[in-house]
Image (cartoon, rainbow, N blue to C red; front, side, top):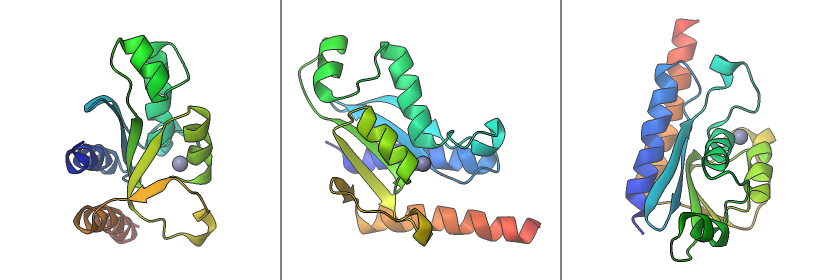
Length: 154
Ligand SMILES: [Zn+2]
């Protein structure tokens, strides 16, 4: 699996969010080496606390396949593909709300780039993997630059 390529797709989504003045977070859901859905944070645009990249990706893919279960087994059956793992790539470590949604949707694996820096959003979880240092840095910088720009604008 090409982790870097998928994380770059998530970062591209995050950049789209930044263009809309949203906190830059992007997510993609991958199955059998293919991106099934892409989404970015739209909290401000929609004025919805739940409009995070992860929840939007889950919502869109569930709608598309008409099933809330996004585990590899279900996806394989519905998409008529060999069994594999469903993986979410997200540019920032998911918050608790999104982690709950990810678990409820039964996504097999989550790979994130930047760590949460807000301590109130930090929590323990067992199945998160952190991606490589360069991408981690890129994702963190995307967020730092966004907030730097925000402070300049205000
Ligand atoms: Zn979230």
